[in-house]
Image 1 (spheres, rainbow, N blue to C red):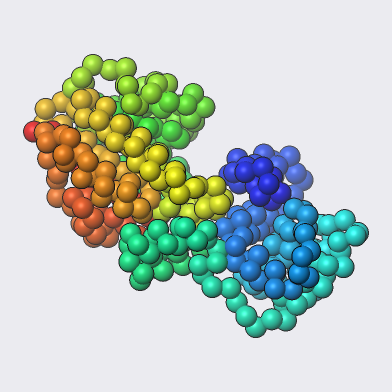
Image 2 (tube, one colour):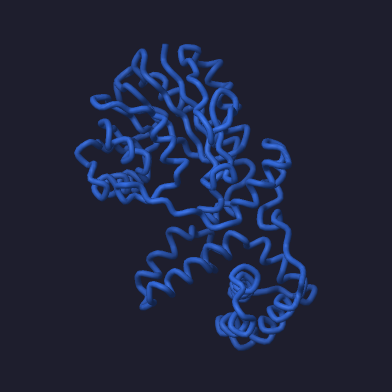
Length: 359
């Protein structure tokens, strides 16, 4: 927790190796995972619940702050009996801080007040989603993303959110076609498509390209996947080489904050504009890779207008040869010329998809 909070580490990268080195039972590993992901996801709300009972002006050391968060999460979310939640949290801190942790958590346990949903997000995210989605849809998205994600396992064993699986289906790959996945890592959509067609999987980071390779092997599609490490804005392929191109672009991730609990505390307002610029450059490069009559599919797991409708408007102006295909059916809703799924619509990640055909 301290590494996530202070060092900016990612829970999905830090926690699994620590659990692998531990002697914990499977049940205890699941409990630790729930505590870390849950307390990270609801960090702002837990601080709200705790800080009311911390003496004004008192500076809490990171290990004390995170012990209080873990205790408050047990009390407010897991409904752990107060004596158990308090005693385990007190045991996490040095002797000099045990009195503070004990007193604060007992007051949290006795308080009838509960933190508002919006307190578990930076204010700029709340404001951005209210502006871009409207107050009601933003409230639903924020509330849903404060709950643990649904675990969905594909028929081949790969764990993937259903909205991402639906995007892979919307690529519409047919047997005998050659597909380019321009931002392939870690390989969820690549491996889904490779059950039907041959896929060239490109990723700018070698580590993520290796993840694609491992996932292709584990899902038994390695014969249908060719992996290339390269820059998607300058892909090393001949123009019009592919029947279909998927640009599952890097984005602010504001539709997957339930699955990536630390992302809400890492992403910054300026990232949205920077990523939208990158998305346009990726689409510009991808357009030249699609053969005449072929398809280009753009997807992002975010909900901002800047990375969805604005990008759609940009590509409509810059690439008139790319004609929009119909918006996918329910549970997608029309969003620009594409489709949007809010997290609360089908209990999935939030996702945008745009399908284009090269005329």
